[in-house]
Structure formats: C-alpha cells, structure tokens
Image (cartoon, rainbow, N blue to C red):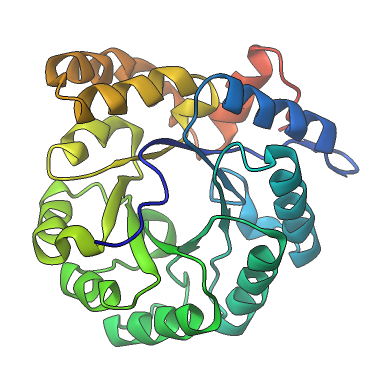
Length: 268
C-alpha cells in the first residue's frame, strides 16, 4: 500500500489578488483560517487558485510562502501541472526544494494527447521528483480523460500515489478503484459527489466548498470513513444548494465572491 498524503478535506485554496498582484497578507489569513477550522490539507495553485494564468515566478512565490506559513501544521500540496512537460518538471522540482508534501498534476490541456502520451508525460515527471504525485483528471477543463486502464499503468510508478477524479463519472471511478486498489488513493474533485465517491473506496475530497466551510467538509468525510454513513449522506444532501450556487459561473468566480462576503478580501 502506498503513502496516503491525507484523508478527509483538502481545500483547493483560492488565490487572493490586488491590482498589483498577490495579496500575501490575505493569503496568510486564509491559511490560518483553514488550519483553525480543521482542513486536512491545502492545495495551492490548483484550478481554484487560478494557476493557469499565473507566471512561473508567481507560482514559486505562493508555494514558498504557503509552506513557510503552514510550518508543518498541515500538508501543502502544490499544483504544478501544465501542458509542457519540461515546465512541469521545473516547477515541481522547485516545489520539492521548498518543502511541499505532494504535487497535484493536471493532465496536459489543449495538446489532446493520447493515453500513451499521458503515460509518457507523467512517467517523465515522476522520474524527476521524489515527492508523491496526485494525478488530476478534469476532462471538462482539459479536454482529455485519464482512462481507468491508464490509471492502472500509472499506479505502477512508485511515487504516483493518488488521483483527483473530477470527471463526474462514478462508474469510471469505480473501475479505477477496482483496477488500482491500494496503489492509487482516490479523491473526489467534485463537491456534489463526495459521498458517492467515498462509497467506492475514496479517501476524501479536494474541495472548493471548504474554502468557506472546511470543518463541515472535514466532518462529512470523517463521518463516512468512521461508518456514520447516514450522517455523511445527510451532510452531502444538505450542502447541495450551496454547491450548486458555487458553480453557477466558472470556478473560481463564485467562490471568491462568497469568500469576500464572509470577511476576507481575495479580490475578483
């Protein structure tokens, strides 16, 4: 069985901006809020963090800052994916050098690579870092799906340990769980499917909702894993209206609006 980076709630943290750039003071406040409220991990520079429109230097500065603020109190996972393998390796090596606990690496968008191309892309990255890697499958954003058989082949690489599954296809998730077993931890990438994914062997969620309610999302997952299935299911259904509201526009527009409403100043 491979290393499990975290169980429970991993918050896909938004990036606060001003007109001049990253608002580091507000980022510090948000990290402290997440730790105080019981998040199990923080994902920096993911989709919700607007990584695809950041410069390399911005990514490096956020990753470094987040590791220093967290100071070992919570796992920090850096989103280092992209569609250029060499660039992914470069930023992944940097993230490793400053002490992150893992990497979240999205499929190479726009290129429309084959499944063999995916294998080669991830294998090359994995060979160049020692950190545990979470694959990130989000076809609605990237135009490409990691198929279950490809997940099986990737799970044979020692430091590819998990997948964030945001395809929305529970049947596919079940096939991945059946094929990969303990060699690939599965995290939900969709807040409205956390409990369904846990029911086929998932270990948690990388969540947008938990930017607002980390304790709620943490409790929902831990309730399920502790056998309190009815309570977890009730929490999932209770949260659906809020989850729907957070995806009325393209993420992260609604979640940044909501975070501002509860007292943070993360920009737009």
